[in-house]
Image (cartoon, one colour):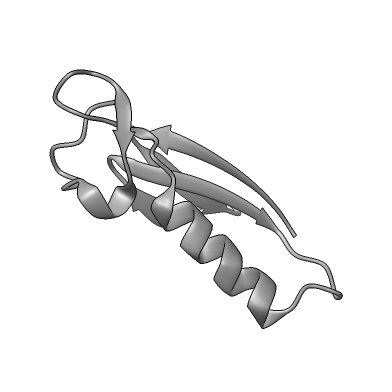
Length: 76
């Protein structure tokens, strides 16, 4: 299992020139899964992503996890 994450101001998924999903501020997660990956792997990864301190606090330091910020107000 491999993952690439990116904080974004806007992102969308387009298939055959049709937007299927889109977000404003948030996390873009590109996930690669192999046959050998397990539910335990997915659970570990979800917990790891939710705990990563990648959002800026009031001092501008990357010190907040996604569960600690309101997505409407987070600072990139």
